[in-house]
Image 1: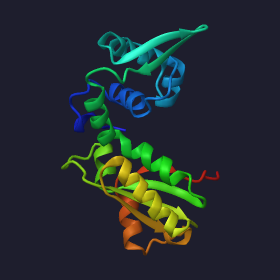
Image 2: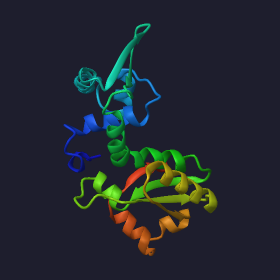
Image 3: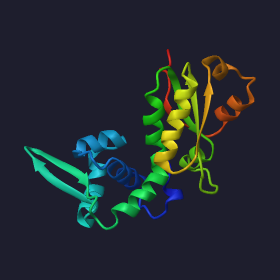
Length: 194
């Protein structure tokens, strides 16, 4: 995921993703190993970022037993504006996965359109909505309710497209062809059989 080009005020993508994880899930505590695993980076890569955030006061650390426990310092004067920036840049991915991923019958879930394009480093104007494709045998009302909840949480329109597995497999469907050929963020996908 390349988001730094859209947010040049973050030093690295790892720093931005770490801040997003901490500040978009402020009630959770983490160990260095948990953070590294969640972000898909090594603990040695993450350690300097953690140290910088602690020094700046954005991150608190405490010791519980032998574990060093880390959390966002939500009382920091920059916590609220930083959280808003992170919610705009990184929030859709986690919110969409949380709201739509728990619906029964979802076989595939992805974000497409301008938000996915910016996340994939495609230049363009900032996105003003989030386009979501839900593939599966899912209740339409539940999909629209998930879109409403997501929209409320994100503060931007969420546009769901519901497709059956058969529609997803058709190469003649113009919208599906367009989605497949453009940048996407895959949140849920069936495991491929070898």
